[in-house]
Each structure stands twice: as structure tokens, then as C-alpha cells.
Image (cartoon, rainbow, N blue to C red):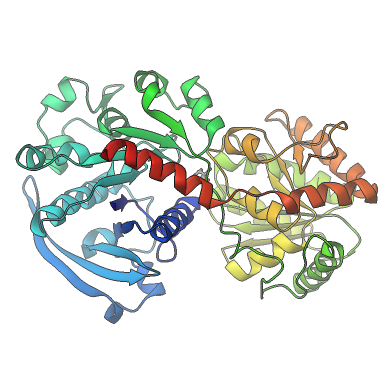
Length: 475
Ligand code: GLC
């Protein structure tokens, strides 16, 4: 089967979060099952930090017309680990510092969408499945319609990684950016709350819809964290499935991870983790190795509950913890964290940035991993934490509830983390209190850590589910 993955980011060339990892891991597994997978993303400046321009092969060159605008588009190709990557190049839109977060994001991803159409037509490409991830390519089924009248219709799968970001703009932009008739607005296909909504358009026009955990599928269908789109989801209920993300258990493996001072497994994790902790405490200038270590590795956004984290840090430090934060994101959250770091340099380390090597060491060194997300479609940090034997402390929402089993006092044989039952400081503090008690009870702590190390959320199973879904559409 030939699959085209349409996304705004993909590991290892452009990554701001879990979406990029999913694109790569899912595609790799599909390739292992002998499917032909092509990923198309923009040629951001970031891509050229990972691969030299000379390594890319010019695959197509054409002009993209967006109403009065005529823009050149070059498409570059690269084979990487048996996946074909196509990069859409238009300097004025994509050669910038960041991947997104610009005022003209709608125009940029409209261009991306129109360029994919141009590419398919120019090279007469055929795919059995076009799999679109999040809002950025959400208008593709609509803009392809006039072409598909003459050709065979493609089958579209749409995956919601985060329904909070929908791609919203004014009615006029429909024709201005996407050459689409007002009819699509007036008839309601792309209209939501009086505006054009890319995600809604995808939900209405794609053949199947998936999201990244079963629980998140349930939540958004029930109007929780749905960011207004529940009525649309309800209309498509029978075509929606939740398929849990996984992680790569070969890449994230404390037994062979060369970034750790001492590798470890189920039998000797206590020593391995102790060594990692000693190294990191020294490296980051923290004091008292005996303190429990709480870590956070995340994008610093409101979704991740960082405001609560910032409120709880002084208590944590006072009660006897060491805390490490690694991540970038919203400016005010970064600032608050930097301020806290200045206040508590002996027991808090904050690195505003991202460093893959450092992240591995943090996962291995920490006793607890904090993820008090407001909502969480799947979450990947908690899966990596489990893999390295750090107990996740999470809010049981979305994928966090599907992957972490909170300790209740009655389930020592299955629990592998702790739950924060409400989005409040007091609920967070009581979970922290439990964590401290757990840390003191060495036998119990060891038992839960073992449960964590044994957890498996493998991509193999999930990739098979996607494949089944594709087959359902193609046959
Ligand atoms: C988004 C979601 C996150 C999910 C990731 C990959 O970043 O916020 O929960 O794990 O997409 O699907």
C-alpha cells in the first residue's frame, strides 16, 4: 500500500513535540510491514540543521497559484531509513527561525496544502491513502476535489493529535488562499462559529478519523477538552477510533542507552538509577543526592499544566526534593521558571531549551516524572519515564489515564505512578505528599518502579491498527 503522510513536522528533521515522533515511528513500523510511506513536510530552516542541502534531491518544481499570488515551489526528496521524505520549499514562508507561531500561519499552511496538490498533479502521483495529521493539511481533501472528479478519489485518514489547535481564519481567506468557492463556507463544510476552521473541514471531509488514545477519543466525543468541536465529532462518531501512540523500545532502552553512566534493567535498576542521579546532581550543581528527584521534560505550554508546576516548586523544594526542568515554550512560563531557578539554585535546575542527551539522563536519574496536564491527547514523556523506571505523577486525562496506573494504596502489584485527581494546587500537593511517603517505603517504591519498567506501549500493535484501518478503506 502507498501512504502519503501530511504533517507540519516529522522526526528527525523538524520537531517541536510528540507529533514529529509519531510521524517517524508510525512510518517506520509501516515500512517494516512492507508498505511504501512518503512523509511531506515544509522545508523549514530547521530541516537544514539536520541535513545538508546538497543531500536533498530536487524532485519537482512548479508554480502555486493562490488567487492573485503566484509562488514558486520546489519539492526536495530524501530517502531516510526507507521512508521517503518530501520537503516543500518556499523560502518566504518556511525559511524562518521557528516552525510556527507566526501571524501568517494560515497562509503558510494553505500554501503547503496547495503545493501538495500541485505536486500530485505535476508528478501524477498516486497514493492508496492520504493520512493527514492535525489541522495544517486539513483542507487538502477539499482542494483536491476538482482534480479527483477526473481521477480516482483518494482515501483520507485524519488524525487528531491536539484538538485545541484548529486553524481558524476569516471567510474571505477561503478564496484568497485556497481558491475555494464561498459555497463551502455558506453550506457549512468549513464553517465553524462563523469562521473558517481547518480542523472542522478535515473532520467533515476525511473518510476515517483517529485520535491518539482511546480515552481522549471518549473525552472529546463527550464534550470534554473538545474545544467546541463535539457536535461535529458526534456526527462522525462511527468513523472515529482511538489508537494509542507508542515509543520505540529499542531507542529508549536503559539496558543499552549509551548516554547513561551505567546501563540497567529490571534486576539492577536501583544501582543504575543511583549512578545517573549522582552524575546529574553533580553536573547541574544540585545538593543532597539522597533527596527524591522530580523531573519535567516537556514543551512549556498551558496544556501541560506548567502553571501548577511553577506554583508547586517552592513546596517541593521546601519539603525536601530536588527538581529538574527541561523544555521551551511560552515566554511567561519560561520566565517564571528562570526566576524560580534563581531563588532555589541548590535544589532546582532549569534548562530552557532542549537537549536530547540531557533528556535521557534526566529520565534515568529521576524518581518521579511530573505531568499534571490540563488535557493530554496521548503524551509521550510518561511513556519514556516508565521505560526508565521513573514514576509518572499525572492527571488521569486523555492518554495519561490509558498508560499510567495510579497507586491507590490497594494496587501495589499493578500501579506504576500516581494520580493528581483535580487540576488544583491542593490536589497536586497531596499527590506530592504520597510521592514522599512512597519514596521512604523502599520496598513499595521498588515494587512500583519495577511495574513501571515492565510497562509496554509498543508501536507494533498500534501500527497494525492503522494498517487495518487503511485496508478497510482501500478494499
Ligand atoms: C500532541 C499531543 C500529545 C500527543 C502528541 C502525539 O502533541 O498534545 O498528547 O502525544 O500530539 O500524538
